[in-house]
Image (cartoon, rainbow, N blue to C red; front, side, top):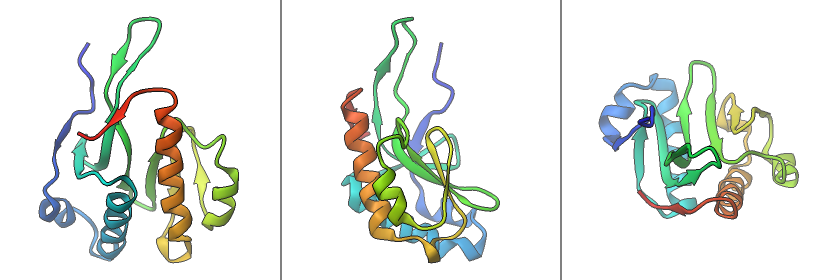
Length: 140
């Protein structure tokens, strides 16, 4: 079975053109933060997710895939930040982050003006380190 969410080259100008103008400065800040934290070039995943790196998994059932390792996406009312495999061991960093909510592997941020960007960068790095303990992680 083919992986549903595919990676494509990142066209920054086209991606920014698809964002609400009010989000463009925050988008640029997130792009710089993820580039710095990962050292990898961005790729576009599924048309709206900006991803950095990928990881290879294979379950006992035989199901396997290579999705993005970390990244973010602009949603209607907030930013979705993807930290895989989740946030269970990152409570100390989350406490520094500022207003947020968490899902299984998504962190939701309304706007970045109240977010501690150093904490977010620490979280991206910690999430990648945690992911690498479970699965091979590499640049795209």
